[in-house]
Length: 195
Image (tube, rainbow, N blue to C red; front, side, top):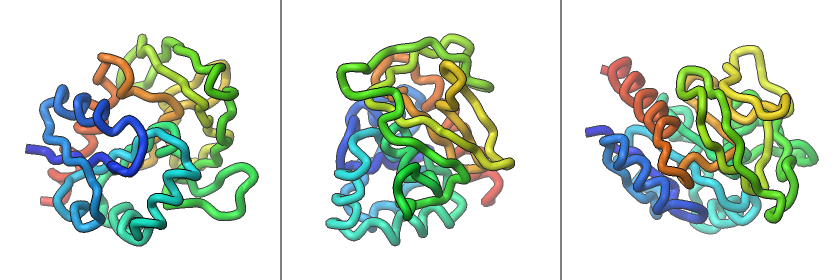
């Protein structure tokens, strides 16, 4: 059985766990860095990116997350998780994990009260995905090896680069598990290549 880790420091952890389980995989809430060795892929959930970074530093996770990213195992960042994966963040000098060749702008769709839902066409996933945007970032620029999966009003809101997947919205906050399922398939592919 595929084991998918969900970084359990902040954000919609339980909702991601339920979504992973709905896709027929096992979910593991990651509270200690040693647990990263037990999983085949990792979800970095939404939340507040600066708070998340503080918690990552407090619990000494950053080096382990970077090692995980280099290990060949897939990672999926949603909302704040996308900001953690990006190698450029508008207005900041340094990235966090910095493994995905994208430039991301935080809170680019407005504050909490400007949260909204939108139907997206996500390439290879769904033509009618109801996406929940909460203080969402967006991808301002994507490198040449980055596959753009979805846009909303001309802004890039989902992308994939090899084994890294990122989106601006919260797929775990709906009953539509197709994007999580897409990530589970990415993990299956990477496992079959590793054998």
